[in-house]
Image (tube, chains in turn yellow, red):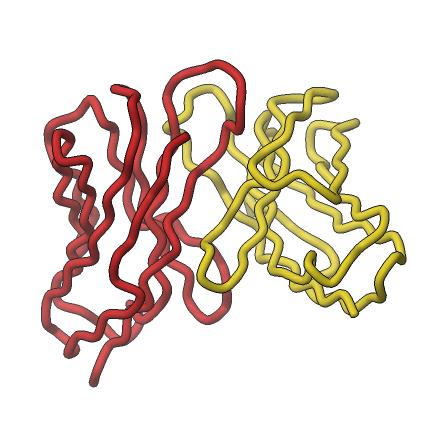
Length: 114
Length: 118
């Protein structure tokens, strides 16, 4: 089954404790992206990657890091989480060949930073 | 930068009736793509319908159709014969067709919460 998976689905942590949210897709997609969703703000892009070893900032990159060492994986790293990073996070992927291509979203990771 | 505005935080409709969700956007580009996504209580993001800006014909997917007015920068979603399973948050989204620097993903509106009354 074609899908985007994220782990963990739920995470409670404390300020300053480094964490990684994994994202993996099995569709051989070139383009991958991270979004955060906050009440009343919709979804905002954090980082994206056009291909392996190619990443770039989205609209709200502060406090986040990403890497793209393999085509299928695109982890989101919070080196020193803060309470304002409490949010619902989505990973998405698409073929990247044209921008009309549908972005497939993962199930979301709900993060609470205390 | 592009912006997407959904002016209706919440809409309510009777089951089997028709409802229209509004979306406007601001852009200086001529080539782009517009999307409607549905987010049910499970929080999964599900693509409902997609429109290419260069196409004059409005997109249709079963009970879902759009009214795309390029000059007015308007992209409304019409749901016919509303069903209980249509209850969800609906997000309008924009994606540039051009290249260049800057964020290269979807720009979302803040969403409209659709309630279906049985």
